Length: 114
Image 1: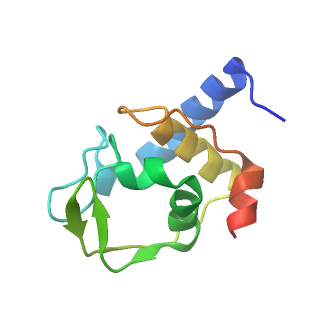
Image 2: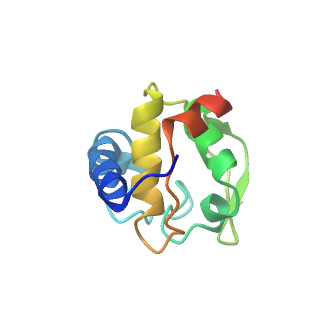
């Protein structure tokens, strides 16, 4: 079942609210991250290459080195205590922002990665 244009827009709007509460401190309002500390979400090859990996990162957290847009980051991101809907919304927002690939993430996709 697809998400219509209205649903996509609504999910991205809700996702922005989640982002501003949960993600902005590290990844910044522009999605640029903090050089050398927190990877960018803007135009992120890491996110755009594998949506399931992105979902797992939010659900289960990330630990250890990753390479984003050719730069190595060795920090940790804790698992986020968010519902499947909140994770779907925030990732839809991220994918709809900052030059990313416009993917729509659904709660079912998130549930499958738990």
